[in-house]
Image (cartoon, rainbow, N blue to C red):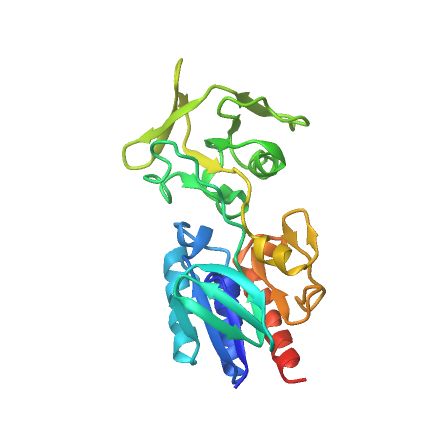
Length: 285
């Protein structure tokens, strides 16, 4: 039975596993954690859920579905992908896995700053996705913590919805091209504070900033490492694929946030399904 190793246990990876298992492939998912989705408190824009569902619950359902269909979900971090005499070898903290095809579904990990309160208030005012959560901050004061184009894009999404948006550069110079209406505070951030939810941002000096929510926008890291080492083409830090999620390297496919575009569960699930079907056709040639 041909083996497809899927690196990443988020919605793209689990969707790929479901489709691969149903296609009678040996599907192995290397899951180092649910990524940004596992930290999402409420999802109410995904088809089929009339009530909001947490990211953790959605992932748990996806894992259970993949396992029921025969996919093997391994809690391990992939550490490398190498060419082998036939196909590839995926190295991980749980051992090595030979593969006839590999699907990269590593997501676009959000960097988490070492600031007191950030981890504590995840899902209670600390968010990693403006498109996902701007709706919950209509007319409220929010802050975007980060620098560069990623932070500005998060701010652009929030500005038409939130009552006030402040970019926190944490001691760095503000980026160029600030959108109209965006306030900037360059003071070093000391802590995110509140009781049951986020209420304010404390700085190393001066008065705190009142805020109902903080959006972490420190960019992405590591999503393209495997593709780069294998010789796949990149667009910045995004993996370049064709319409059927194939990279420039035969047998290597990519799906979800690591390919860019709309960073939403709906797209990730579709990408995973397409990548699995493409991998199936590849291994059965």
